[in-house]
Length: 135
Image (cartoon, rainbow, N blue to C red):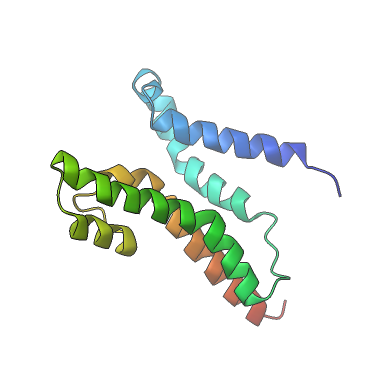
């Protein structure tokens, strides 16, 4: 089966909607951006799972998803946890704990990546549920 360009276009649209919401465009097209905000993240999550397959072993599946989603989140988060105290924004322990637990307190720099641990959790839950349900 070849690439599905419709899915590629839909993924691109969902990414553009997310970026537009977080950019200055949201001030110019506020009503339009707000009305589309109801679909942008559900569309992003739906498209992330549209080709979901669970043929891998659990260890391999979770490892791939961890590497793709959680490594960037943890590396960036821990990088910020080290850097921010040097510029007078909190302490390392508070930031590192926030990265691990995914909390927002005093760690707004990482809030833009909230979807990575959530998407990882959704993938893990979907794998466990779909592997154990006979359809």
